[in-house]
Image 1: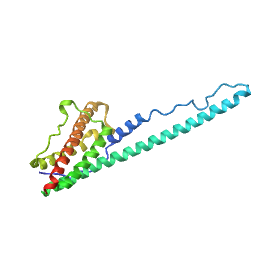
Image 2: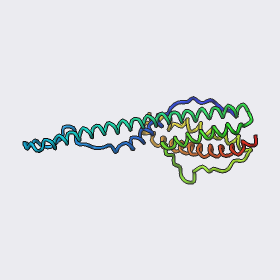
Image 3: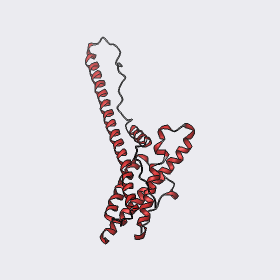
Image 4: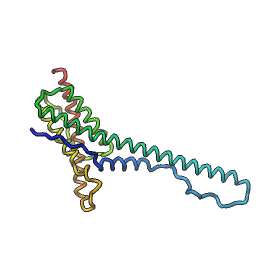
Length: 216
């Protein structure tokens, strides 16, 4: 069994997903009249109050637009921070698991349960932005693990995280050439499969570890 400690980087593609998702959610800002637009000149003094009200309304609309934009920017920044943290933390947890496997230490089921619970939480949150989808026939199953399958399941989880975090769809999206679009789609489909498998397998390992804690 061989493992390597992976380098941890923030992929541009994940950030692009966050930007796109939150931009789409924030496109319903209030619309006002263009600056300078107003009623045509009128010599009737009774319209002065109405004109002033329209001007004040435009100013309030502009302030509202600025407020909504600021809120969208805050949401975007928070999402980017969360995604960076999740992406890095999943790799750190993977490295910790791999080191213990290489050292052939007896499994600490309490630790394994905590590690896989966090991997599951963070990969599930990443999927909020990735919206991973695979055909029904390719969806990973969540079969209950046997005691003797735990080491093999952890090895598989580490390899899935390797495959996911090293996927070109996550690392090179910002520089994809138009002629490579088909390959990019294939890579994204592979990343989707890996992420969904990570979510399923980490949940299964967490559940089995929890049942084995009392036996240690």
